Amino acid sequence: MNKKLKIENGFALPLVIIAVVILSALAVGLLMASFGVRMQAVKTKNETVAMLAAEAGYERAVFWMSQQSDILSSLQDGNSGATGNIDFEDASCAYQVDFDDYIGARPVFRIVSTGSSGISQRVVDVAVVQAVTGWVMDKCRIPDGTNSTVPVNFAEDEIIDIPIHINNLKDNPDNRDIYINGSPTFRQKVEMGESRQTSGGSDKYSSVMECFDQGIYFDQPDVRITDPAAVQSKVNRFRDSTDPAFRFIPTGTANVDNGNPTRKAVQLEFYVAAGVGMVKITNNCTVATTPGNYRDYNMVSSGTYQQYDIYAYHYAPQAQAPIIRPVTDSYVRQTFGSKQSDPGGQIFVDGDVVIGGDSLTDPNMVVKGTMTVVATGNIWIADAIVVEGQHDADANAMPSENNPNVLGLIARGVVKVADPGLSNDSDTVDPPDTDATGVQDRFSAARHIYKPVANADGAPVNNRKLPHTMVVEAAITVGGGGWGAENVRSTDGRKVTGPGDQDFLIVKGTISECIRGIVGIIGQNGYLKKYYLDKRLLEGILPGDIWFGGKYVPAPAGWSDYRPED
Image (tube, rainbow, N blue to C red; front, side):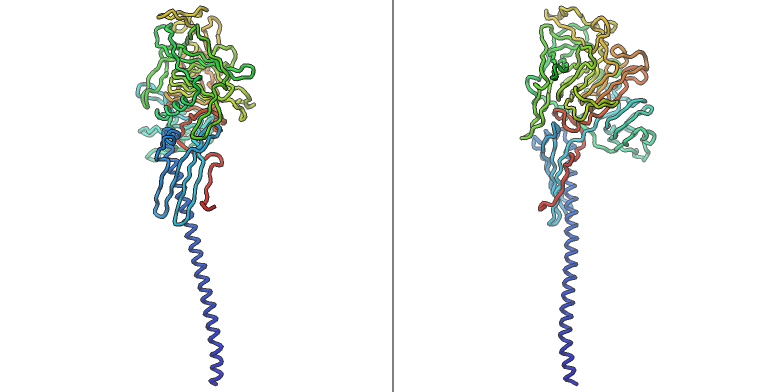
């Protein structure tokens, strides 16, 4: 019996040992699996946190960029804010902003942000560009005094087929910052710096939302068009990169007006000859001005305005032959470090510019090539301006996507459609002398020739009028006021038949302005607006860096994120 028990005990012990080993192995396996799951969870958590930290660094970098008056200058000067670190409770990140390259002539910047959590790292590497909004304005208001403004309305029958951005007015009480009369059509998105609701929760936009086909985006960053340092920095860079043969300082000396102040200017005329884009440059012109009429204001400083003397007509020295050059002679490349933009034409004028001529054709000004004109004073548009080449076969006739021709206009002063009717005999301004021998300067023996613009409207030669439908195909940047038309109460320089019969002012391009400039008086005189975005401007076709947007967005296919070991 005892022997049998011993034999059974001898079998039980190995079984127990085997069971213990198996259970131990299972326990170790379960522990290892549990540890592995926990380690994977920790790793996943760390990678997620590291990615969030990297994205936070990217957002901080974009915010820093939006605060700079001019990002290229900040990077060129080695601004310390271009690099930075952020520490979190269980993570950190390091970011850096650099210039990357050009898309055509449009600067591209690179943000690299590395997030770390534990032993995990994630990298966000993004190519960004300055966001381009079609029509940018600081205020949807026009000046009516030295320190005051009044709302200006978007009107019934107007078509606004261009994205709009309006900065936050920060008014009190808090009213809607966009003003609407009737039911204009907004075909593209609208960005507002303000919120939709007042601080008390009232909806300021409920009554007008149906006007906006693509909706409204609220609480958007302000653009920097009212920042004098931003404007001046871009003007200086443009001046320094322009071929010296196309930098002008006008020294007009005519004293032949009726006693009103004169201004020095350069007249530019664009045309095509034998398939070649040409520019005729008449330097040293003298603009005879006349006191501004209704709403003819410019900006002295942010929030301060003055009524300025507007264009009436101008003279050039009789003995001075104009400069005639192919547009391509002015081509240069923007350079940053070792990177260069595509070539483009540049003309810089330290003074005022008049664009227009006395051709009887419509349109009068035709631009072939890529060209940007920068003036430290005003730019007066004295005839229709279009780009040569293919246009879409639809009602808007926009420059086609593959059309290589483009014009940019930048002024530290205003950019305005002039009223050439001010030189008419019937007007209050002394009519120009049309004697072929020229007009003698009141203070010297020098003689000057009247330089008519726009289209002749019968005799005498100084009766001038603009086309019935005024078209401007250009990217317009106004650093000292608003885009618009001068002397809008007058019908002398426009083909209108009576009150309420208004012409259309058609812009195909972009507009950036400090304040709204008036283009007409609803139901009376001046113009109605039809504005369209030239999408080619988003592709870097325009020479020079003229954009002032407050947002930086990823370039097409510009975003990538990865683990450093990938």
